[in-house]
Image (tube, rainbow, N blue to C red):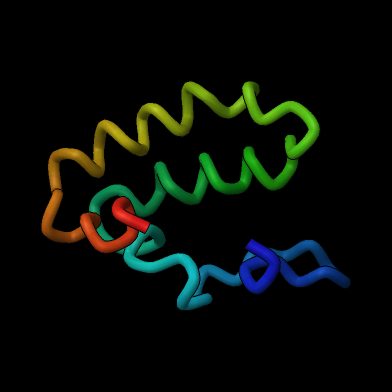
Amino acid sequence: MEEAIDPKTGKINWDCPCMGNNPKGPCSELFKRAFECFVKNQESPEKCTNKMQKMQNCQKKYPRLYEETNNN
């Protein structure tokens, strides 16, 4: 996750290869909301459970697009 976040600004690099296909495709906005939530709530990640579940449910509908990042 370190490469995905600029330590000086806290800004998320959506183009980081470490993100895989997550920031692209039909579930990209759900992923971005969930990831932003996780970054902001690292001390209480449970606050992001609902967003993560919505993202995962979406990604299950497109296994070919998201299978690479889901298996890592």
